[in-house]
Amino acid sequence: MRFANLLGRAVLVTGTDSAGATDVEKASGGEFGPDPQAVYERWDEFVGWARNTDLTEALPFDVADLRAPAPAPAQVFAIGLNYRDHAAESNFAVPDTFPPVFTKFRTALSGPQTTVVLPDGGNTDWEVELVAVIGKRAANVAAADAWGCVAGLTVGQDLSERASQLAGPAPQFSLGKSFPGFAPVGPWVVTVDEFTDPDDLELGCAVNGETLQHGRTRQLLFSVPALIEGLSRVTPLLPGDLIFTGTPAGVGIGRDPKRFLQPGDELTTYVTGIGELRQRFVSA
Ligand code: ZN
Image (cartoon, rainbow, N blue to C red; front, side, top):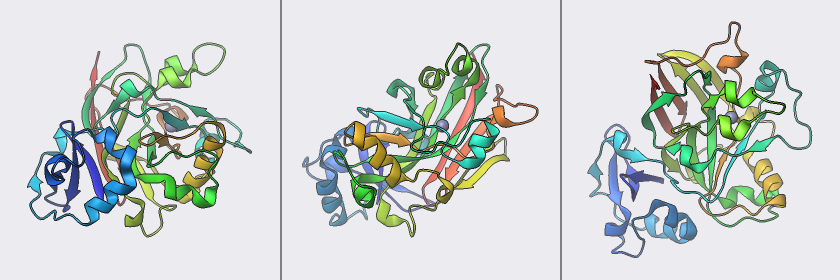
């Protein structure tokens, strides 16, 4: 099942080449409202309803009209140094007990196809990431039970402005990664049952068609279940929360010479089995 936010309304998406959308509020006769974020509060009930609903009347739509599938999460967790090759290119040691955690402030969230303003004087970098969307309150959840707390998976870009991120005596992860539009996600949330192996998904990104990152989520040092176990030991995870799970090697700051996004560049970001994000960059 694929769940999306079409111009602010909750929809179910069917089809691939010519995708169609079914409006949740209309199809459910008002049992579920139009707010995409509210649906996660009743996720299991919603999935049960969706499985028994006729979606053959789905209407075509423009992917550019999709917005963030979880547009107002209570919490956005982002994970650093969660792939061995990315920790190495960043000149950091591999985390042993748990990886670094920061946030992308939720005002940075956007839909899958956007134009992003490059902050003046900055070095804006790309980070493809698998994003897990939480489907029920999760406190002290064991890794073995963690997939049951996930509503689904989506694609994320952890856009990162390295000049402000690395200025000062300690890294400024959360602010440097939260400029407007720096957290595109989508195009939709795909439920976990749709994947043969949700712990082994291919992901990557390209600038102007040149592949710069390519990896598989089986290379995660801390898997989605391990992250949920570790995070939920400290803070309860809430329905509709997001976890950006970290990025593989190939970011611009890890290259020689370093490379950053320029006005006019187009960044495409994908996770196989989910879909693609597309960002165009302009100067401030
Ligand atoms: Zn990241």
